[in-house]
Length: 464
Image 1 (cartoon, one colour):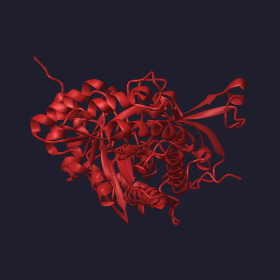
Image 2 (tube, rainbow, N blue to C red):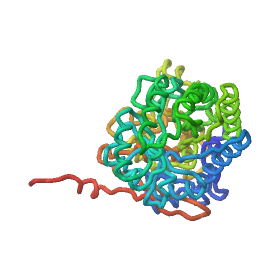
Image 3 (cartoon, helix red, strand yellow):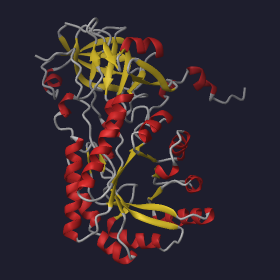
Image 4 (cartoon, rainbow, N blue to C red):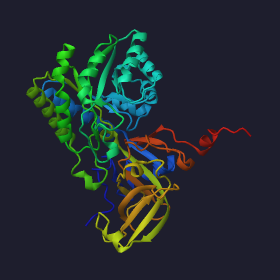
C-alpha cells in the first residue's frame, strides 16, 4: 500500500525527510514550517548541499569518462535554469564554468566573481552592446548563432584589440525531449545554423583575424532520458570535422554537445531518469568510437547541464487557501492516467501558482507534492493543486494523491522546482515574486530577495 506521507528522495533533495516527532517535512535539517514562518510563502527553497553535490558528480563523471578515452571535458552550468550570485559561486567552487544567455546573466556571473574566461555566452539575438561588453571583459567563448553575428563579433574583437574565441552553433537535425518547445536542434526553429553549411560558415569565421574558431556546438533538447539522440547528433557533427580540419589546416579543437540531461519530477519518471555515471560513460564511448570510425582527431568535449544540476535541489513551499471537492463524470474518472477510480477530485488552492511556476502551463509539466506541515493517516484523495491566478490553466500539480484531510492553513511542498521556476517567474495579477532561500546543515539564508506589492506599484509612472 502506498505511504502518502513518504518522502521520495528520487524526486526531493537527499536531505528531505519527515521529522520523527511531528511528521513535518525537513529540508536541510530545518522544518518546513519554520522556513514558512520566517520567510513566508510561496517560498523557493534550494538545498545547497544537493546542488553542489549534483554539480560535482556530473563534472567528475564527465571528466573521468572522457579522460578514460583520451581527452578532456569541460562542464558549463547552464545559468538559464536558475542563476543568482550565490548559485554562480557554488558552481565555480565545484569546478564548473558558467553558461549565460543575456547581458543580465553575464552581469550576475561577473558580480559573483566568475572569471570571464570561464563564461560562455549564448543567444540568438545578442545586441551589439552585449557583444561589445562580452568581448571587452574577456568572455571565454561567444557562441555564434547566425551569419550576421560573425562580422559583428569580429568587429567588436578588432576594436578591442583581441582575438575572440567563438563556437558555431549547428542544428544537427536531431531533436529530443519531452515537449516540442523543448527540442532545439531541428531546422525549423530560431537557434543555430544548418549542418550542411557548417564547413562554409566555419571558413568564414576563420577568415577573420580577430576570431578564433573553437569548434561546433549543438543542443538537441531538454529532458533527455537516453543517450541515443546524443549518439546520432555527435555522429553527424563529427562527420564534418575531417573536412573542417582540411579546410582550416588543423584539427578542430572542441565539440560542445550541450546539455538537456533529464531528471525525475515524479515517482513515475524515477526509474527511467538517467544515471549520470552511466550516461557519461556512454557519451565518452560514443565520441571515441565515432572519431575512430571517421579518422578524426578526438576533440575536447564540453557540456552545458542546468536542470540536472539544480532541478531536484529545489522545493517550493505553499500555504493552502481554499479546498473544493468536484464531482467527476464517469469518463473523467476513467480517463485519469493514474487509473485511480475516484469519483471526485479535491481542488487545493495555494498562495502561488503560474507566476512562480509557469512550466505546467507552458509545457504540461508534471510535479509531485506532499503535505509538509504534518503527517496524516487520512484516506487518500485525488487532488489537483491550483494557483490563485485568474486563469483556468493555473495548475501547479495536475493530479496527485494526498491525504483527504488537507485543509486551509496546511503547508504543501512541491518537489524538483529548482530549475526554470524562479527563472520563468512573473508578476501576473501583480503577484510579487517569492524569495529564494538556501538551506544547509540546519541553517537558512536568503539568496534572492522576494518582492513586495509596494515595489511593484512603485514601478507604475503616474502623470496625475
